Length: 109
Image (cartoon, rainbow, N blue to C red; front, side, top):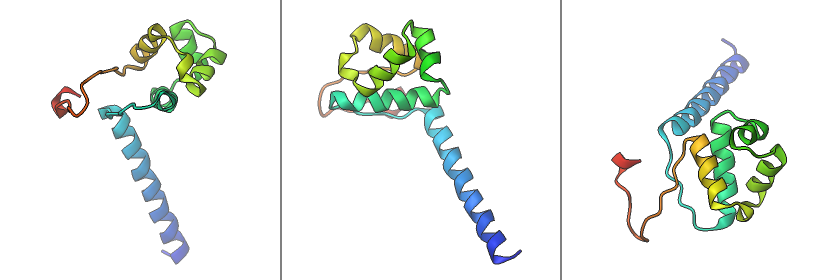
């Protein structure tokens, strides 16, 4: 195997490991702490992409237009609690409120 082919093989393996890690992280769930409204959009976008849904597909499932889903991901402070709970239900993620300084045992996540 030439040096170039060896490098390509190693690079491919690294990419495959990274993709596998991303799939495992989504499949097993990941706890995300939300401290600012601006953090909600990227979290929901990641959950939507992890569920392999486009904005249009998510919108169709929750009764919103693609444009509104995009708007909510960019400016989540305009989201109603009802929209948040509907979207999280479709994306199969939970919203959990807890006291500051407490941690939910790993078995519950």
